Image (tube, rainbow, N blue to C red; front, side, top):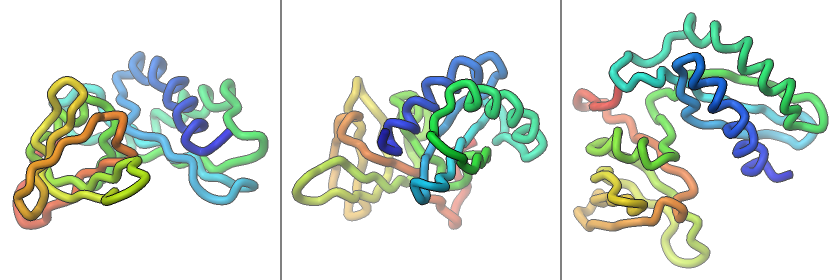
Length: 164
């Protein structure tokens, strides 16, 4: 199973349990060597108005995350589990994320097989399944949600961020 498929299976297993705990599974990554992969689980509060999750709150989530992964057994061998907050470069993956973080600067990579794949600019939002950006040079562009490989918030150290 490829890392992207493993990450999707882990997200699918974690999300129902996370909801019971008032937690949002922001993202899961499977990285590193095949023999010793690292599973990175990024969590935050499900309540959009809550401040970003703290380290103490993350520590409380570890038990159920480990329990779900033990039951799922996503890797054939051992792996390292990292549970963390989404960080300043928070990944966006669901339509709801693109709506919630409209107005933030983002870096976006598409699944394009030819032409330009990487884009940087202001996230204008999402309508239906179409994500709109205004690129750094002012050019408006749009992408279907399923064309987006990865999108992260680009931290802006010069002004107050709108993200929570």
